[in-house]
Length: 355
Ligand SMILES: [Zn+2]
Image (cartoon, rainbow, N blue to C red; front, side, top):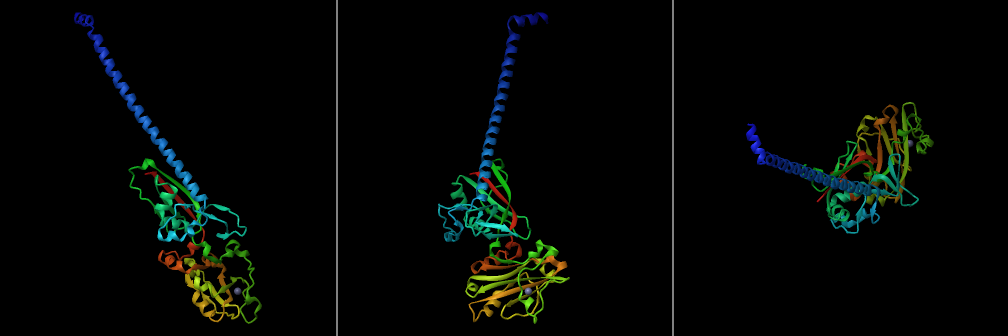
């Protein structure tokens, strides 16, 4: 044995075997390192791409939520209704020149260009949904990305709004960025003429400030609050001409039938005490106004509600004026509901990916 080993050593056989093994090992190690570094650079590459698509998604949603879009009132462009979209329109969702109070948006008188942070326009959302390819894919993203938007209201009485491009399953999950923000959406709150839940803010301390014609007319039931109930009375003027443009509706929350509330609608020149129980969620007031304004161009009306103190939470109602050309679409979309006339908290989602 010993001699054989010596002979092998002599011929360098052992040495060459070691060298061969070393070379194989080295090649193997180099191969592993190369593979590892390939993997590593690939991973770094993916992460770089992902962080940039995330940056784009964040920037895009910040832009959409904080800008009203260009030009001003772009959503009023009638061509949008027939699918013609000017390449000059850069859509934004923010609401301009209004402020929020008592759960409603109001038009600001000062006329400055204030934008309400994180408050989005339902009307603009609908225009975007109907023209997504051109307004978002082309005008906002220059056809470089595919994207989708979704609005999920926190109030379950309102349905979600989904729009944009289709994303096929999880195949390219790593290249998709999603931004989720909680914002306020105005829905149809700008159609509200009166919000009839003032006392909600004051509870038992509610004091009616509005003058009621029943207080001063001894022939009529007095509308002062008593132990059992509140009276809520509002006066407003209706023009005959406006009946051609608007549907005046009294819209109450679903549980109004539990509130044991009564209401009176009267022309101030023809006062009455005809209380009716408030049972219906939607009451069309136009037939009453049309009949009453037959021989007059305008009249002042008063609407009175009597609400039991221990059923306050079941009484929520609004008087709305809906442009006549929109009423049918509200009905067919199941949007003629109290909740659609309030500002609502919603989750806004923007999903974006390279094409
Ligand atoms: Zn009254």
